[in-house]
Image 1 (cartoon, rainbow, N blue to C red):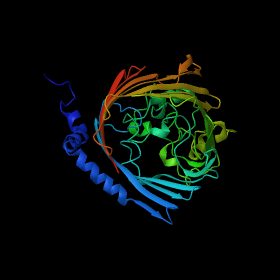
Image 2: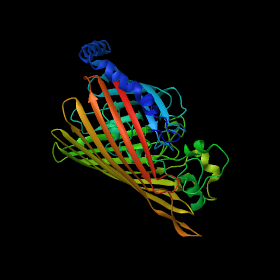
Image 3: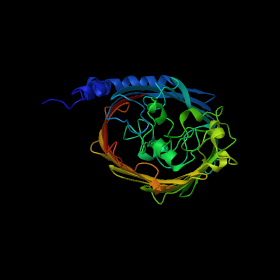
Image 4: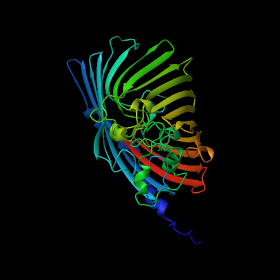
Length: 428
């Protein structure tokens, strides 16, 4: 059978081949590999002063392959169909007595997001935590770390995430730019790709100016207070950038705290199976470099991203379920409020102790902005996406996952898009 024009029959196999070949190669000798990883783990743990000081170095090696239908979905920045994305992540955990704890996460890869041209080696997280009492009611933390909002950030690592990519609210690019202030609804429509962009080249670079509701785990810098009191968990943070901010703005040396973002989450745990959470966040979404483009008499603090979120999780025997709903507003002075609602429902089922499957439904809906010519226009494309992902844990240290995503957008230029991905993870 002849392949469709522009599609090479074996390209998906080439793009996904490395993770799959590693699974086949290591599968027969997995038990022997486990002993090796256990020995490495013992060598990377250090104790002193009668174990008052405990230091542990650990990490993951991820080998990912993507085969994409264009345009690339979410936070994958590529004009081609194939991406190979290796990543080494190292974690350093230090416990000094019962009250002081510090952690550092560093990464070596080709960029924070697949296809992004970023620093090859970074410190993604680092923080110092003080716990004055041993019952967990209060913890104080300063540094650069994942947001407290929602329930996905705490399980976003490759070993814990049943999928390879993030849910839609954490990666779907909206029609908002953070480097330039919008002055009309038509401008937002162009940024969203709903209206044609000027034919000047560099459209791929333009896409990178768009922001989602939450940019992945949002490793921005600041301070947090969190703890648990009875059946209630709480967490509040003051960060230097909004939830939608991009990775290069997260470091404390970039945007500092002249225009901070306040976020928080309160969760109720009625029993061991259920958790119900409520999150809120507010802060400027524009970068300081956008100040020359602001409407006269307006400041960055009047271009706010306001986010409300509800989440739940459920676990019973072999079944785990997570869900989150976000209502977000990007305030645009003299244009209007760009509102959007995004949600997902995700389920994981363990067929055997090693083999699991996951299913996730995502959707994002957009409101309208007033437009002089048409009355009101939807400011970005409504999106719905289905993710399917089987996974297999070869050992306690080796795992392979596959993912197929089918996405539909309300636009003539792109009705359907798809993605195939494979990921091999070695944990030590």
